[in-house]
Image 1 (cartoon, rainbow, N blue to C red):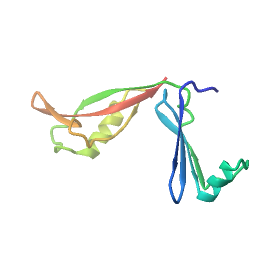
Image 2: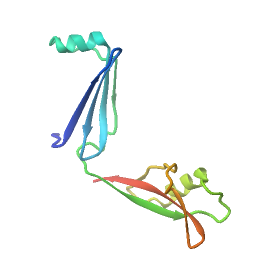
Image 3: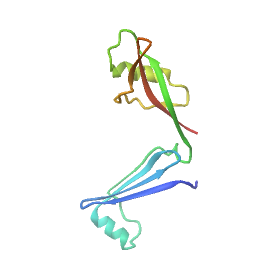
Image 4: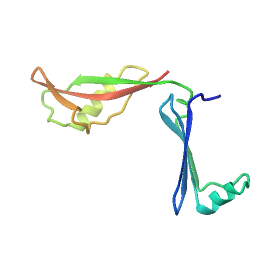
Length: 129
């Protein structure tokens, strides 16, 4: 698979180097590598097959796809207290359309709001196509 919009970040610090590879179309970082100063020196001196301090690969099922998102709004139960994150999390999962993933972050000012005198919540839902 060839990615047309891949990006790499290499951040060198005193105690470690981190390398992140991102698919910008999918809006995900799918590879994270950490190197010690010794391992970085070996790589820069053209030594091959250098052992990494750590390597994390994730979300490969989303690589090569296009990320899209939108807001999901849903009414909270009348007995819910303002900023009831547990109830909002449960309702977001129940109201999320098939094929979409809810973020389940309810810490922004817009997460809970009143509409027509009733408490509502919103979160971002994401899909990769």
